[in-house]
Image (tube, rainbow, N blue to C red):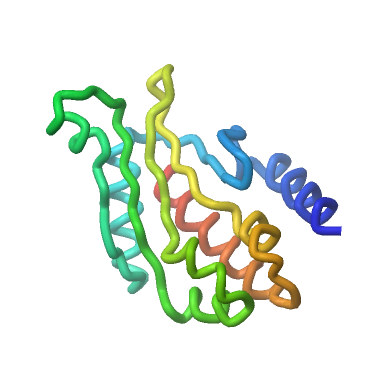
Length: 152
């Protein structure tokens, strides 16, 4: 049943333009109209304006440079809100391993910037979450809206 639900969500997402490309199992990737840094900056600003906690911002490119290695622009923002995360953890304690939420901002081999995050439907399957469809739907909608706003 979960496979059918996940397939339905994927089909709906593809048709709505939510998922621009598949960059991994259980991930949602959206093409950005901005650079990696600009997209991450926009995302962080949106989070703060909405009162969502920003716990960390990791610049992997900058960290690679510190050890004389090269990496294309790659950043991760770790963020969350207990009003959203707590109900999810009440559904399944193990989902806490995937919280707080993370958004990855990265550049592909063609120079295109992307924003990627864990698909809540995948977390539902991974943690065998049952009876929490409203929570999963709410998180899916919030993540989609936040990332689209940063990418467009």
